[in-house]
Amino acid sequence: MYDTIIIGAGPAGLTSALYLLRANKKVLVLEAKSYGGQILNASKVENYPGIISISGFEFANNLYNQVKRLGGELKYETVLKISEDKKVITDKNEYQSQTIIIATGASNRRLNILNEQQFIGKGLSYCATCDGNFFKNKFVAVIGGGNTALEDALYLSNLAKKVYLIHRRDEFRGEEKYLEELKDKSNVEFILNSNIISLNGKESLESIKIKNKEEKIKELKIDGLFIAIGRIPENEIFNNVVQLDDNGYIIAHDEVYTKTDGIFVAGDARKKNLRQLTTAVSDGSLASLAVLKELKEK
Image 1 (cartoon, rainbow, N blue to C red):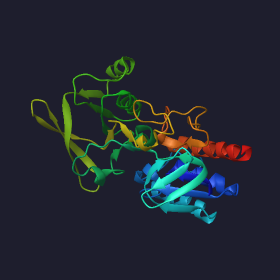
Image 2 (cartoon, rainbow, N blue to C red):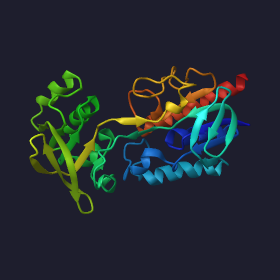
Image 3 (cartoon, rainbow, N blue to C red):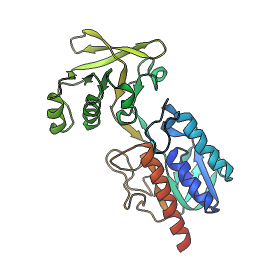
Image 4 (cartoon, rainbow, N blue to C red):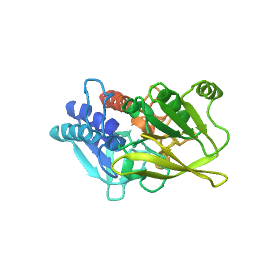
């Protein structure tokens, strides 16, 4: 019997573990892939308070080592289900716990074209607010048609010399107010009815090729590409114990409480307005405090 089982070893999950271990609780962290989550893809983290610059890998490794030094138990198993009596069933074992924190995060929707993985952190990013500052006075492109793409393009227009906004359709799904603001920007160019077909460069991204609906191909010389075509949470397996919104994110009240007593959510897996490293660790600390309150009342 564990005091808490944390599903997911990203920044939110590991922060929860850190707080709970310091409170002398018996904690198990379950992770399907590798610890660190999305931050592992960041070549540099320069927007985390108190840290001037650090690689995503180093940040994740430091957090992992903090948890291990406190005696944290981490197992690499894929969670298949949570039962109503808080039993966590994985592809290898079953575990019983008094409380559970779901911190499975959300993965970025990818273009799924050649060299995409190669250029992550080397000119290719999925987060404009995280990495936009690296592209001051440079040429960048944003691909996407929703609010995230429009907001990213607006944010980058105040930093970059030129912003290409690429969308596969002739109309955007995002809010009109963002679109009107972008139309007033002299350094923003719309490229509609087009898809990116290749990413090119040697050590870092140097250009992209795009093809429009007339099958015409054009190459754009750019320093950075921001992909904003959505994120994918993986919460369907928990729908018996939590409430999901239309996009699959967990709906929480008071930030981390789910519809089931004793089951909490932290990080990018939950419905929220901002998904950043700072908000992930904030969620992790809030979830741990909620767990401590729950355990105290038992």
